[in-house]
Structures are given as C-alpha cells and as structure tokens.
Length: 321
Image (tube, rainbow, N blue to C red; front, side):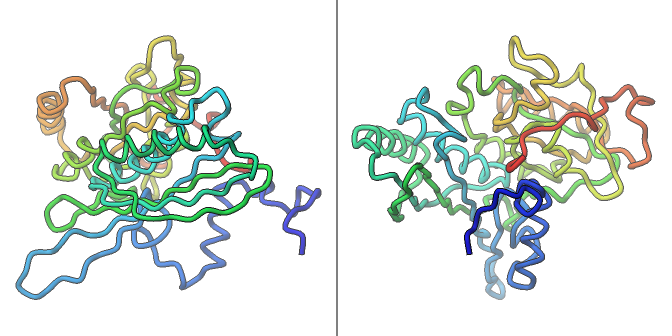
C-alpha cells in the first residue's frame, strides 16, 4: 500500500496535528497509558518503584524531538548550530518538567550525498553542548533516507523535586495566574530558534515551589501553547500590554512566531504570595524576567469584557497544516 496520496481529504493534512494526535491515541488504545506516563506532555514520566520505608527515588523522564532539513533548519544555519539545536530543544522539554537530563541516544536518517564536513561540524556542535550540559551520548542508529536529512534525539532525565514531583501541563485550575519566563517573538529572524538557552535551572527552581502548579515550554507560539495548559471548563485571559517581547517584535509575533523555548506556567497564589514568589525569582535569576501575563477564567468569560486578547483568530505553528 502506497503511504502517500494526492487526494487531500484522505491524508493527514485534512486532520492537522491535534486531530491526528487524537486519532493516534485511539489507535493505540490501552497500549498507550494516560499522560504523564504516556503521550500528551513535554516528557513521559515513568514513576519509580518505591521501596517500603525509603524516600521516593526520582521518576524517570523520557522525551524525543527531531531536527529536519527544510523544516527546523536550512542551509543558512551552521551545522554546529543544528547539532546544538537538536539537543537544546530536547533539554527544553526536560526543563519544562523541572527535571535533570541524564543521557541521550541519536538516530540519523541521511541521504548518501550528505557532506562529511557538514556531518562532522554537526557532531562537534552536538558534542560541545552535550559536555556543557552534562549529557553523555550513549548510542544511536544510522539509516539511509534518500532526499532528506533527519536527526532524532531521545533524551532521558529524572525529576529533582522532593517526592519525585514533575510539573505537568495539567495542574492548573480556574483562578490560577499565567506567567512566562524571558521575552517572546522573533526567533527565526534573530536566529534565536537555534541559539536559545534551555531553562533547566529555572524549571528545577519552579518544581520546588508549591505555587507553581503547571508548566510547559513554548515551542509553537503562546497563542497556541497556552491552550495546552488551560484546564477543562476554563479559558485563558491574556493581556497584551503585559506580554514581554523582544525588541522590534510586535504583539502578534510574540503570540505566534514560536520556537521561543521559554517556560509557560500556572501559579496558584494570592496576589501577595505571587509578589513574594516574583521577588524570590528576581533574587535567583536577576537577568531573566518572570512575568504574570494573565489568568485562567471560566470558559463563559468574555475576553473583551475583561480587556483581554481574543485568541480565536491567532494560531501558532501546527504540523501538517
């Protein structure tokens, strides 16, 4: 059976990423456990076996992401930067669970025409970051892919907070504050999409704070990703004047450009508690802002009535569409 079709109605282009993921969950059935032990979060969380009378050991974290020529990079991006981007986008997933990376495996699918000097520089960039972040590359695989180049990295990690706590996307509820680290927008034009810093220290700090109840990294744009953090029966109210932006980036860019790799989180705190947390953050990370940009409200709430942004016409990046 040919896996491809020229009739769009019967292809994954007719579904888009989110509907395709829903179909995959249905096809897998009981073979796929619920999140966070299965698909649906930044990492899968594999709970440890707890010995009686002993403190809970760390839970294992597993994530996987590729870089694909023509999608995540092109000939204008140096090969060393491609290697760094591959590791760092996986590290960002570990950061989004408040975890620590432990080891990685790499699978490459290469056209036989791939240049040796390009591949050497890719590996040297990857190795430099692996050493910097303390991530040994423990194995992988090579395969032929005529007409393309795909590098896929699987990263293993572990939780660092007490009792093996991992922050997931599903801890928020109505009334929680919405906050973001750093500044957003302009990742492609600036080159930040391959030169960002994964927020590992910041994620571990948040995992130890009881006020932080949900966490994820921003890869597809705030306007899209915030819905993954939004609890059932709620809607996000975001306020444009509060959203931190890079220089020369407009509000739409901050909402939809994607590949920011900052942390998006939900905070459960009174206004006074939130101010204390923000003050503690500034002491811990004086060079990186943490900004409250909105709040989760009941689904019936009108954004316009609250002076919030209407996100219905704003979309971040979605695969296959």
